[in-house]
Length: 262
Image (cartoon, rainbow, N blue to C red; front, side):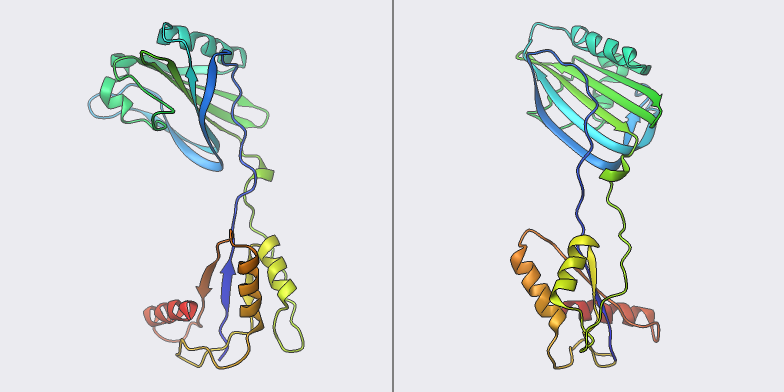
């Protein structure tokens, strides 16, 4: 009885660009993380009695940590020019607070903050701002966390905006496998499918009924896969084994796993 194993290879396209704000010349970008499609929980109110209101937004996510070499500036002096830029860009400020008015320690540790040393938060002196706007592409939400130490000011920017379709991993439409005279895919076909579609079906693998042991024989697909991995050591593949629907489900799942391992 012939069973198939599906090899899946997935990786992401280009990542989202950050929301652009004009930082002063003495500011340096310490860290940036981005994802073409993610969700983020934005605080929309203060921490009070063990909870705070939030809004979860989905889309392209970007987080940045900025260091501003100006230890003498207050957090208000740091946030005001950024807040004005947001207003000029048609953002609506929906929530703003400072230190104890935010909820102090509890608020700070209830929100997502990039790790130090790139982003540093003085628990006794920070400000938070959340804003939103709607563009032709869709809604956007942005937050700023501003703090300062004795050496510098720090700003964390978090932005979630409309998904750019060309930057989101897409499920590929896989055409039926090209079968040769021997009933197997060619090396070129398997490697092309992994690169373009992200998966390939190994049609020539054969197991005895109820067994995880491959029937003796030459398996061109396994040779092609080995060659592909040797040529592309940075790639990662997942092996997925399949059985038919006959028999007990738990036993079939266990058999699928043993066949994938085999």
